[in-house]
Image 1 (spheres, rainbow, N blue to C red):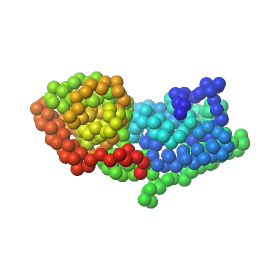
Image 2 (cartoon, one colour; image 1 turned 45 degrees about the vertical axis):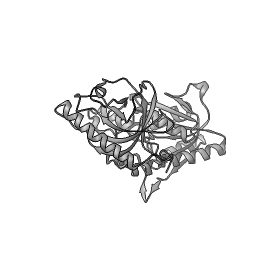
Image 3 (spheres, one colour; image 1 turned 120 degrees about the vertical axis):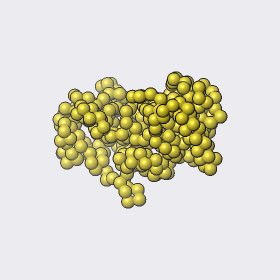
Length: 324
């Protein structure tokens, strides 16, 4: 899969069937869009292309308004999003920087400059709530009319439903925030994971008997936070059991950056720089502040015992990461 961090240069543009959206989570609704897009593209001999944005437009506008809490929580990292899109068989992804220039493009200029000239789209497929252009002035009716002017294909796909409920990124966020990983898996079509490089940390964990793998999560608001039972993929030919903290470490430092810390059971190797995927299995509790390192250590020991008990009751099966 080809990935562009801005519009492709002119000599790398390819006629494509295009869909546009944030694709946070790449859930089953997104997968249905991509499957339909792929069928349409193959019938016309076109490449499939996904146009997505970084940051999320709502995150951009929330920060501009001075209230970043209005931004949607992130389900996944860009790395995880691109991996999921590649698994769907997408040929090309354009991750467009969402900035003031893009935010101020009129709907017509967005269509002409981005969709037609920038990406050479010949066929478009969008969701039923698709909007585009400055202040969301463009809708599907307008998009259809613009495509008709250029003799381009244009279709809308209805929402994908599971158990009578619309599958959406918001529904996935709600499931993750509630620690309902079975529900999240059902909506995503796969286990929920976060992937990243193992980084050097403060090494506080090893001084209290609980060394951790540290992964920096590159956004401010995750869809979930707390203490979790996890499995780690990428270090062996089978996942390794552990317990993890995802949050800003209130027990250790104030105003910390978002960090995923994973303690693996009976594992002492140094794996700095390696890429691992952390699969979330069960939520144990929320993050808390502790008045002393001793109290924190006692709680971590209890968390580890709970996680070990969970793993003993739920032995790994090879289909753990497979799609629902």
